[in-house]
Length: 119
Image (cartoon, rainbow, N blue to C red; front, side):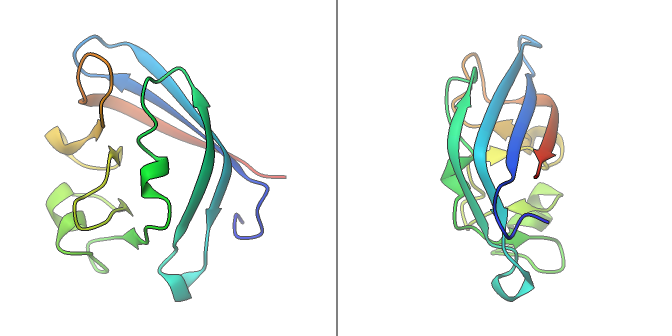
């Protein structure tokens, strides 16, 4: 659905400490096919979140419990585009691992949503 380009992505995230909501939009969102382990291409950040944590994941492959990268998906309890460090936007992780790096007032999240718009 996304590999031919033209898709946009929006995150809505809710900070744990303040319960404030933030938005991060990306004008480019492409997930390649299985031969690349669903490698991510993401760019074109805008939004009211103070730090673009997701573009840092550009070029990462999708990790899951059964196709893990250094034990990160198992440790975090959910699949996402991780590298060996885990990455900066961990919206699919479980418990205290769910965060958006450098979010004003604290990294921890209590809620996240992702919306995809494709032509």
